[in-house]
Image 1 (cartoon, one colour):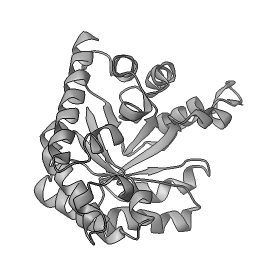
Image 2 (cartoon, rainbow, N blue to C red; image 1 turned 90 degrees about the vertical axis):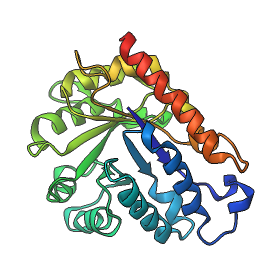
Image 3 (cartoon, rainbow, N blue to C red; image 1 turned 90 degrees about the horizontal axis):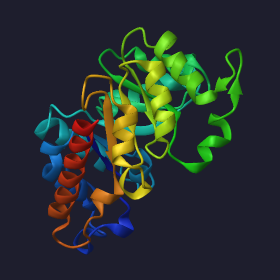
Image 4 (cartoon, rainbow, N blue to C red; image 1 turned 180 degrees about the vertical axis):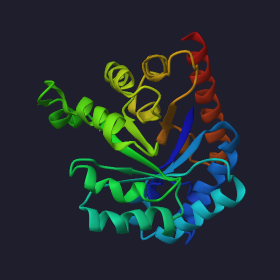
Length: 261
């Protein structure tokens, strides 16, 4: 169930990698290689690369993942959301330029802004639904007619009942709101959920697994992301080994919670 997110902050890289031309790539590669046998997916966060003019390092990282860990899906966390003609190019960026297996998208502009991604057969489209940030409630809790349900549940229902004819869609629901995870699961059946928010953001593992699991299928249907807690387990030369230790502890805790459920 564990998804390792790559949010490489140059200020937090080990000293030996700071300022190196490929330092971000080397940092992420070492952690990927150290944790690959513990994870169900990897999730590079696009902004952390783009802000450092490190798009080439992102391409190199995903190429490395595809070559050395080909069975592990790569989610490009870009949260794209624009009109259809622009979305077509964002889809090409995610799937053709970077070679990602899935991409996160914002559904605020409706289905025509999501549809271009679905035209890429075999690729995943992960739609923001109930996000883990505190301000998400500003909009996501607004009641929507005709059912009078909150917007995040309306998005979940649209995704599950109307948009997902090809079976490519999953949803983002934050671990910081387990009650809402359970409501989304009730609406979406066996749709996969990407669940950020454990680790540094404080989401509770047991509550998350209980809320997000598929009935009678322990451990299925969830990609539970941890980024900073794993990436920055150590700032020394042992950063990859320390990341592996935290990843293994997190993986084991997720498994234990799944069995207990």
